[in-house]
Image (cartoon, rainbow, N blue to C red; front, side, top):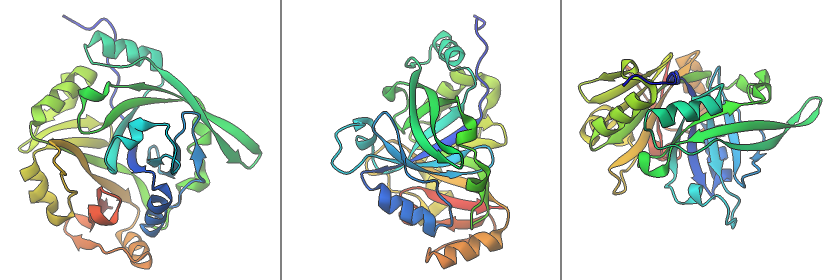
Length: 282
């Protein structure tokens, strides 16, 4: 049966790196990796964050204050890459479309956080549409509707010592890639999902999300890959566009970060980047 409501178009809004209750340490690490981070944000939901704002997307370091008992959904997940977030400009329409496609999804949730801006404090406001946790054992998958995008993509925050410009690729490890590939096809339509030798690829604008087996992950990333820690599915790696590999190399060296330059770019092991393997490419 044809869908009654058009599918959302896949485009990465941001990715979430779970710092649990150690956000200060994660922020210090990402400064050493050459990212300029936004001031600490405090969500009305109880979580806290720092962002590395890129061209049209960003990295979110997410945590909870030490000793806080809110946001158990953050504390219940291991540290590391934990969220794939897609853009939406119509949270109600996205919720309806996903329901229509049989995707297990929760109703839109509204929240905000104060932001210090040159003209004074303002509230950055959001509505998110989240898949149910059981739908993706690898981590959280949701859509973000920015009601105040100018409070997120503030141009001075986009300039990073490592030259980072945007997210090119996210990698998910799964024992059965077809399960997540099929979910992506229901979410966005089969025309955006391609089989690969290692599993499946979701085409998301200029970026992609690759779902691959553990053997394929190890073959590509080797010792740089994060530990599975008994998980059959987990989010493992990011490829980031930089304006200059030389600039990225200098920033990593200045931060005391061990990195390896190869034919694909500059690689940083997950152990040095809060649980996610990073690859910088021009």
